[in-house]
Length: 311
Length: 143
Picture (tube, rainbow over the protein chains, first blue to last red):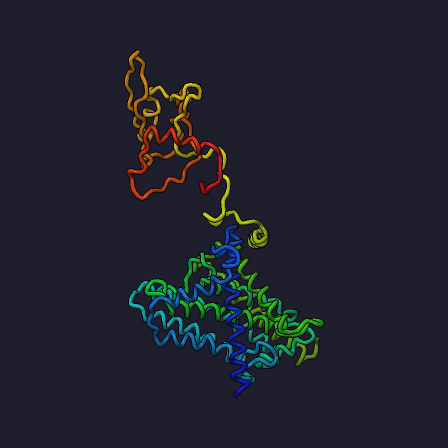
């Protein structure tokens, strides 16, 4: 019991710090890319800005509804089954990958339900469209996860990381990695984490009130992004495996921030992709077919190796 | 695809460049040369009289009709400038008045921070325009 509480405390601390660093990086890097300054508060005071922003949200009166509370809860629940390191996992189960996917889809659906409470039809249709498109991006991700499961023959995330002791899964599944990465990028675009994005996942709350609800939906969109990046690292690029003498935790954090920064840079490098038409087109014409080809290739490889022993 | 890669490296390069914006008013930059600000009525340095003879050409060429000149005759029957009004609510700082002035009696200063709460404060008279001499030198923003 004490250990579990300790782990929960560690996780909260890690994600609190991570949220702070990522929101700061998000603002600062995007500003720097546009050759302007980030948080206008000059010099050292700029570091406190994300915290001040949180207080700004809290200062406005807002009544939380039950669905927002569930979104908040699920944003935490996602992390209960995902191992951040070999030991830091609250609920250690054998089918953690399936449970994680379930929680992720639930979080998206909860956002949809929360949006449907609005009395303004336009907002509901917009948010419904966004969540619908987001859910279609899950399809190539799920197909690629199946490919990874076939290669590793396990549903446990810990076992998948242990499997990559010699070679990372990216060696076996380069196409899968590419598709997963592009899918995350497109989801990042849809969630509107970078400020200048025309898509706003939290459109209902933007228009119908601010405060705690806005903070929670922002938090949930960050958590979805963190979740996707962590799953990408665990599935394809070795998770917390040590590299020489550097500890696995540091390697994990480095991978996380490198991917986050590359995603932000790519988000800014593709300003033309700000239309549903393009995003849906990319998904159905590019991501889904290639992920199916990847799955077929993986199955063919396994059949040739295990049944006919050709390879 | 190539365009995306090119944009990616441009963005990456921008991370290490100096930002082009400043945190105003805490940071300052020098005003660019030939910037157009409020008008200045020049004085003849020998006699300390206004060079402008009140011919009214600037009033005619002004596209926004923001200049209003009053002229009268002195004892010797010469035309002289009695009053020179400019309404900055209308002025677009095009610089036509300076360009068309034959005797070079007016010039544009670098003063352009002219925000006011009341419209009447943006109507300048002859004496106000003579006093703008300080702003004819390029200086920092914060002045």
